[in-house]
Image (tube, rainbow, N blue to C red; front, side, top):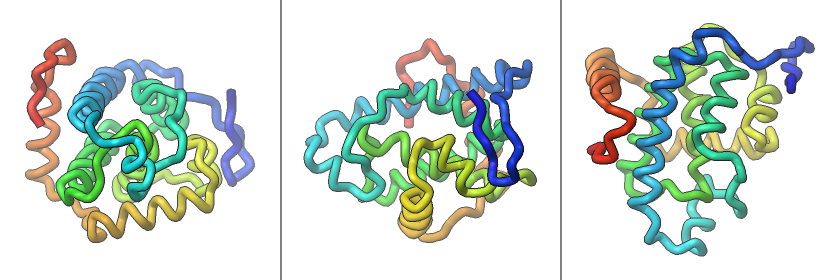
Length: 181
């Protein structure tokens, strides 16, 4: 499957060796997100559908496959995924948003989109990101705005926090089910 960017070029998924190097990180991120989802299972479905950034339906694609899809098409750097996870953590700390099956895909994508804008030199147009996300462009722009407001426009990541976060991720064993937040 190929997607067309706004620049008219066809972008095939990245199938390079670099993808397998990032797969370990994506597995760790997936595991962390799944643990948070498990912890939030008690939130009622009616309430979770009404939270900001939520969808009316649960996407059929798994978080891991969604992360791989995003990596394939954006070729985002490892650091971008780490920064995105830091943004999700910031959002989680405000206490108004809980990760649920109704919002996790949207939150993950918007966090990655913001991290790409913050961290990457190469960026595509919004239509391209909309196709990758599977979210209409107008809605994706709204989600980006809402997410940014919720984290109080705090997109800055200082080097020390990044290194600490990366070090903690490096220490995670994907087979270890006892990951601490």
